[in-house]
Image 1 (cartoon, rainbow, N blue to C red):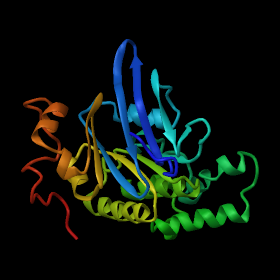
Image 2: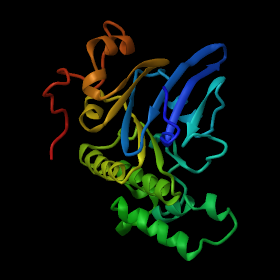
Image 3: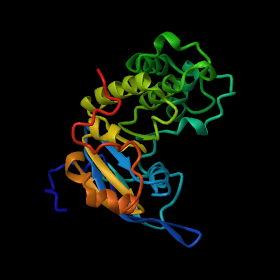
Length: 262
């Protein structure tokens, strides 16, 4: 893709990203770009490489080949610009941490582990909690919060980190519809403010409703673009197989108002 020398590099670009684990190709030459102010859904079957892709983007896993560029620079040069909101099942909720403690963690990268947070850090944490509508629950232990509230606290931690790219892994699993709607409204507001957000989900219909773009993944990129352009029968077959059950895809995309009520 030719870009003019004046055009700024996209916030996030994967170039020919390949990951092999134990002789198996988990990701095969994955290339895509995500622009500023974009909410991109990452869809595909279990084992499609969605979590692997996120792990590579946040430097938790080295690629076998290819590279990820953040604002045109290598991920080593841009640590902290990408924030990861993990699947909430994978977190130890027994830790006696309050929502406030979790969000302040987003500042440790800037502050250093052993320095006391400054006024500026506390202000950023407060702003972040307000942005996700969780300021009134700041003293609650994370273990006492609902799945959706925890996700919003993790988004607040990402904001306190001053990251402009957010990755959310299966943000909706185990979260009720009302909380999903709250999370979506937080994310669309962030997108409108210029953030780049990638969100993996099993529920294609859900993503198709509010994502600007969909990255369809099955170890390789099956398609990437506006949901109405890429979620075609051909692409769905390439992702899920000819008889594959497409999650959350009961009655086709058109007009199916799946769990989406205002």
